Amino acid sequence: MTSAHSSEKNIWECSRGEMKNHTCHFDTGDDQIDVTGETIKVQHDGRFSMTQSPVPGADTEWEGVKILKFNNRKFLELLMWEPPVGPTQTQELRWVTFELAAGRLKKVGNESVQERSKDTDSPSIQEFVGSVRDKFGLSEGSDGRVIWQHKSTRKTLK
Image 1 (cartoon, rainbow, N blue to C red):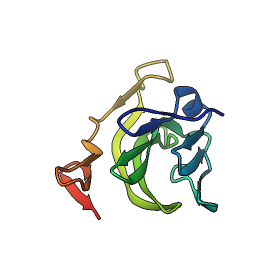
Image 2 (spheres, rainbow, N blue to C red):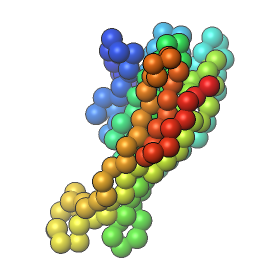
Image 3 (cartoon, rainbow, N blue to C red):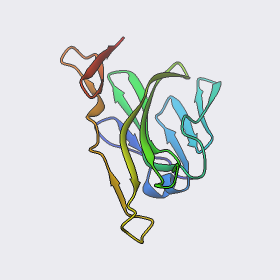
């Protein structure tokens, strides 16, 4: 397992290979975070915490797993397609965010940001038709506070 890389913008991201294997390790200096298909584990100053993955299972497709740092606050952001359901193999893309605070994970949001179904006119299982992806994300406001946004809903995280 490799460590996710860090950029100058304080973003640590899982590689495509790690996401395909449903395992990612982050080392942010003061935190060690392990994300797997079943659990999220955090080590901080000798303390250890663990929570169940919000979108578990082998049929889950990981689209993005990263840590974002705004000032001294860190957030774990997961983008995962839920397992397919029904005859059209409908899936929802979940955007799940946690704040990392003193070695603990505090859930900030768990939203569906897109839906897709298997294209029944295409013989390939990889062909999907879907909705437009919602506007979503975390950002830093002009006052340094972190802003959570999904569609037209905006929250300043305290």
